[in-house]
Length: 412
Image (cartoon, rainbow, N blue to C red; front, side, top):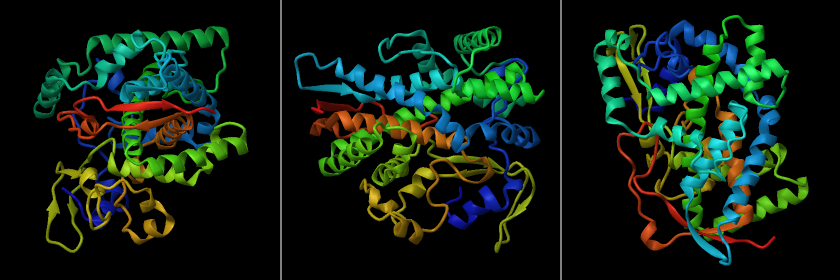
């Protein structure tokens, strides 16, 4: 378990070639194409695929998709507004609304579909997506079996068959429709179809696997982070008011909360970073030694196959780097405070060559959803709802019980 920032740097960047792989269980890609995605890939297979996909996630490409994200953000505001009826304040389980919002965003940008789960929470897409990240004893046992007996992957499938069948059908039918009708759209699906035309290695199954992991990674992580952020702002009215003023002033200046507007707001950026400091979506990073490695300035040598864990959550709560770590304080991310901290003590997206490829997309999705919500609603919380416990056994950071907030309309 690695907590020293210099060692973190060595493992993730300086000596990355020794720790290229995550060391997770490997499923059989021929039997289960959906698992052949970037997160699971190893060695040269990972490197080739990463190099091919990286141009899809540049700032320019994310800007290209932002209008679709903004449209879903407007739909989020409209869906909540409809719940008020004659009341001016209501209580809502905001994680559910945030999850429906991010489901719609990923559905629109990755699968090219108008899912509209904000209006229809019982949509098939939403129901299937909930199966993917719900902790399951069967899933855990399968993963353990494959880890202990690699040959078991020839007999076991990791994903629920309903998940595999649904995503395969939806993705392939959309690709065929676009090809048959020459449909062009500013989304990830369009970009990866163009990539497929240029690279023979990018088969339909490869495209499907990447679309699947971008969906899984994009909808749950961003929705959880967004609900955690609203929870913090609900307890800090002064900060919420200050952020709202920045958002309203910026919207007035730009005419709308577009890509440029979202990127220009310094307080929004600091609030985003502090949310991801306090609530990192992946609580730890996993790596495995693929070459023998002698830890610098020690007599310790790591054998091939040694597993490495970098506990992001613990590092983010270390008072040596973040004094009073339980406090939600965006000022930790003013330039002078960032500069004063050791590097590699802030890792919400990992770091180095194997950092999160969708980082820019995740940030703009988060900022758009948050900016639209704070511009239109005021959030508060009852004392009895302020305590929560984290869900154990979950791959990403989630709460056991819903985070219920009071939501009040703001007259524009």
